[in-house]
Amino acid sequence: MPTPQARLLYGGGGEVHFTAATDLLAGEVLPASTIGGIVPGVVASAGPVKTGDRVTAYTKGVFAFQSASATTFSKGTRVDWNDGTNLAVAPTSTFGLGAAIVAKTNGQTEVQVQLNEFGDETGGL
Image (tube, rainbow, N blue to C red; front, side, top):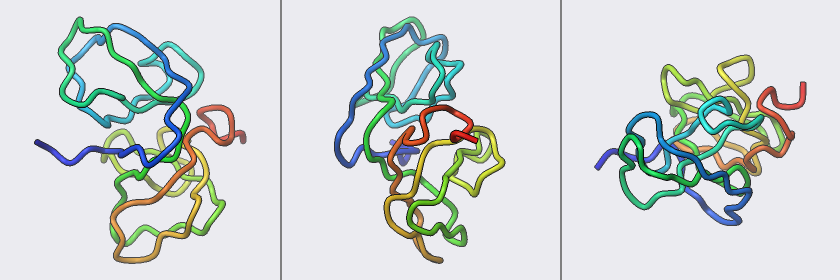
């Protein structure tokens, strides 16, 4: 089983229910357009979701998002998601995720983020 793009650490909420237009994986990060909303979400399933299945995505909570080991974040800074590399990155990428709740240093491969803390997929900017 592949490593999830995001892992719920605590507080999952803001549930959005929809029908999957494509196959999805547990913990997959979804842009707002995929879930029919104005904020991104994370697939809440315990396993893979097939096209046509009903699925739930969390739009709130603290998640650990995959990020390149050389990427760093200060506590409180905006974190974006690069939908091409499937990694959390510095701002100006595909869409905003929220704020880093702790610093991520060189060598770490996950960043802890309060999902949608800024209130919209542009990170409130």
